[in-house]
Picture 1 (cartoon, rainbow, N blue to C red):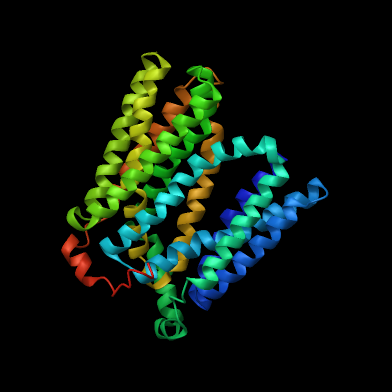
Picture 2: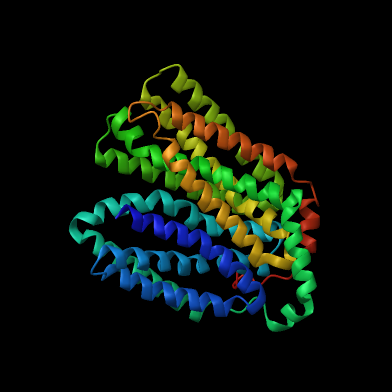
Length: 364
């Protein structure tokens, strides 16, 4: 059963490397529809699987096809908006994408007893149907054939070479390791809240909800402040707050203070990422305008790969020791800030806004 989760995560990581470049070649809408359709079918197959072997295979395909929405969703936004406008759009996306990993475990824990694991997978299939309908009805082709032909294969290769630049890699690594601080918290939360703090299931769920709410609220604030303060300044603010909160968390853990005091720095560390996710994603995507699909694919692959590595690290000290959690979050936050410092100031906020392509707000 554990292998089924691993298969899904592997598929989601590898699938992004497939669908991203394909969308640069064939356009966004076709691969997105194909991925969403295959996701619905594989989700239904997983829910009805008569054996573990078929469940694992279905979950692998589910991850591969589900990656289409993850990677192409970011690319569609990058096609429609750049600079501060893109950062606002990515912040809106991150309100959902950032809160989902926090809310989903709570929802799953509440529904698994009355519905069972098959019921949960049928819910996932239902979400896939909603996504497919949304794609068919709402999402336009943002990378039409004329644009692909005009760009040419040589330009695409040039765009791929830009993935190795300081601007893209700095932003991509900053995003990935900032996300890793949240994944470390999520992975450690059961023993942190219930083991060390002695909280019950209800209190555990409430704290999860508080962190999700704060993250969503800060993401909303970031949307409104991007045009005024600029993308880089908000990203730097978020990374600074994240590092400061984690330093306080680490100091508390080393000083053996009451575990309940850890709640405050954790809320700040998670909430501050609302200033980071959308802005840094926009910076990474803006750095590679000729290969948005490939840029989005590599960003997503790094995100999944590091999240998979972080999860087991936080539990190395057992369920009564928060030191591995503090160390993991601290190292990830330091790397994120260091990587961000490698990015260069490319334009002022006003210049960013004026140089961005025309944007249809309704389409974004």
